[in-house]
Length: 240
Image (cartoon, rainbow, N blue to C red; front, side):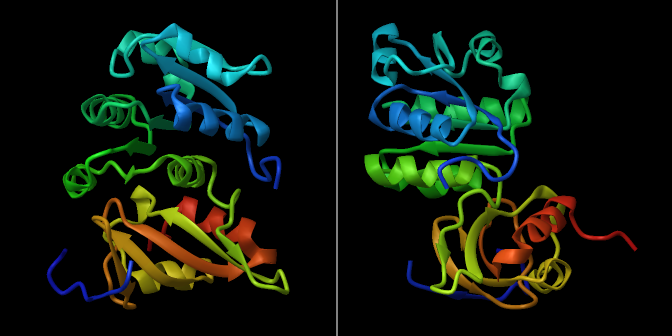
């Protein structure tokens, strides 16, 4: 936490409506196969990596993506899976070490911004969050949460009010907003940041809270302005 950065601790469509993207998934177990099918149902392209070729049977006969046999932290394997054109990477194999190494390779060597790693040991979560790699756990929850973090911002709102006029989106803070205050983002995008998750802990953000790398922001916005909101957030703050 940065000095002078006030935070209040808190308790913890069928097809893509924005641009479809290419996503690489390491691990074809229950989470990986479920996640892959969910992404394909939304129109995204996928590539699945697993060291066991028999695991690809879980994808079913309708799977139209790429399968690559190998290790997710092997550069050649990642290139075969299309990592160089990928918009996101998910490491959801059964091994914590393999997941975190693969996620770091994707993030640091191939510069993939949207990276998620599944971790079985909750005690390691904060360590990995400090390394800039978001983590998730448990099978059904993981597939849903990883999906929300991988698809383009604005594709999968977390909640809408009964009138359909107001929605809640979860967004990882883009690199361009790191070091800027919450109030700057709110004023530029016309949103309200309800709370944020930092290093695995929920916090109520104050206007002068400084956005840090890895912050997971909850944004309330009007449904009819969602596309414009995400465009502003993606563009970053205006330079004086």
